[in-house]
Amino acid sequence: MMSESEQTSHPRFFGRRKGRPLSANMQRLLDHILPQFSIAPSEQTLSLDSLSASRGKIYDRLVLEIGFGGGEHLAQQASAHPDTLFIGAEPFINGVVSLARQIEDNRLENILIWPDDVRIMLGRLAPAALDGCYILFPDPWPKARHSGRRIVNQAMLDILSQTIKPSGFLRMASDHPVAQSWLLAESLKHGQFFWTASCASDWRQRPDGWPETRYMAKGVREGRASVWFDFARR
Ligand SMILES: C[S@@+](CC[C@H](N)C(=O)[O-])C[C@H]1O[C@@H](n2cnc3c(N)ncnc32)[C@H](O)[C@@H]1O
Image 1 (cartoon, rainbow, N blue to C red):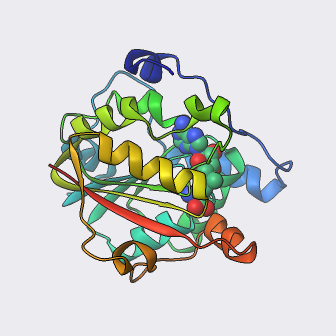
Image 2: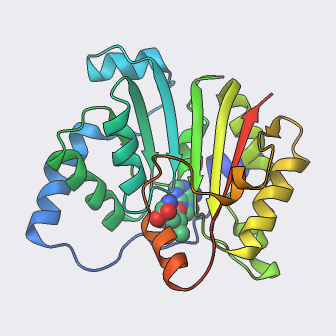
């Protein structure tokens, strides 16, 4: 398992960065939309104030989505909450293009994209900068020998506990039994978050206003039930 400093400075990414070749329109989205919405790789500290200033608008809240995939959930959240600024992190370039398309089609202004491994950017966030964080259907890496690749682990929860403000939320979801047990066990083990569920329907039922993400839909097609774990920062 990687140490916290290895997680943030030289993380090793095991997922896919590229999928199908990009069409001309996808390349246009990358060349013209992504630069307008991406967070530059620099040393600058990221806070609600600095990021609001970079967008030229005062936002009320700052929320992160780690591994937004095709961006369905992120785009819907951004559309529903125009006063919240969302940061989305995703190294898979075809997913980044998909989000850029939704930004363009829906004229969304309140999204910033980190088109890379989130762990490189997390260390730049100011303490308690985030009102919340989503980690939806993370890659399960079900084999025990690959457990060190799982994005949610004690080092990640340490960083998130520093960057999510007290009472801020951490929402995780999964359709994979190994990942479900892992997400719950790791989060309960970590002292800085508490599980807000009070009955089984709180984690078994799809929350209101929740769009079906690509991976959730895949789980449904393949007969796997999803769970949603809502934690809050102490
Ligand atoms: C199984 S997919 C789920 C995508 C999406 N959340 C959904 O529900 O459809 C997991 C995503 O996490 C992304 N991911 C994995 N490791 C990551 C990391 N270190 N930083 C940011 N994203 C990561 C992957 O590229 C992939 O798109």
